[in-house]
Image (cartoon, rainbow, N blue to C red; front, side, top):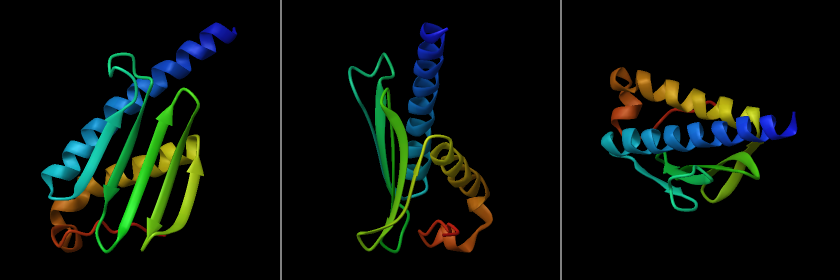
Length: 117
């Protein structure tokens, strides 16, 4: 059972790494500063670090690796929210949904992604 669970987790990490890369590209296409760095050689999905500036000194960082998953949101250098595991993934999904709605959103056009904190 444990080897199967380990393999499933590695698959989740690999899926998240690909999703983070796509999210970074999408943010960059909309004019936001966003990066996604992969850990390891990039082929085995060992993890990634995603960082984005969402405007008004509002930063998010999402880390995924074989050791865990975390989301940190900060404004003006002060940590506002730190989530781990499933909650971190849900927050990432929420940001992706906001991005999908962004073309009609005036704040998104001004370079700010509105996140409810």
